[in-house]
Image 1: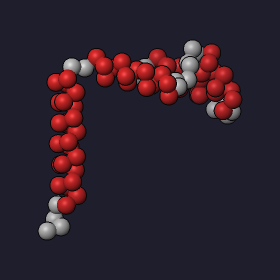
Image 2: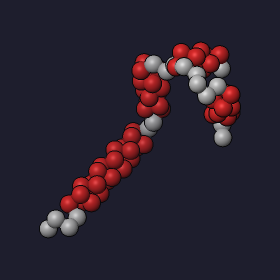
Image 3: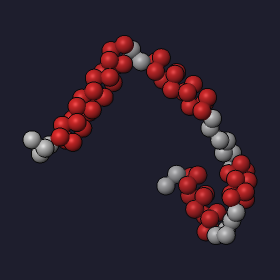
Image 4: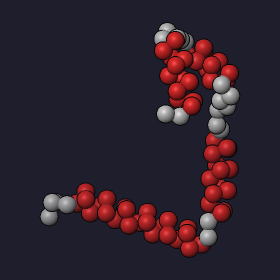
Length: 79
């Protein structure tokens, strides 16, 4: 179990009737900062830009193959 999850579990055991506001205060006291959509997009863009064209093509091919298999599974037995 991760340190944050363990701290959370201990906190919840000690404070079973905590309100949402109190929980948010606790998260803040533990150093938790909410993630914004801009943060996520920026991280994704950095990851995507770090890939080679071959890696991007492989991701696309893998996705297409998975989609094809999903369609085949959906149609299995309908014939």
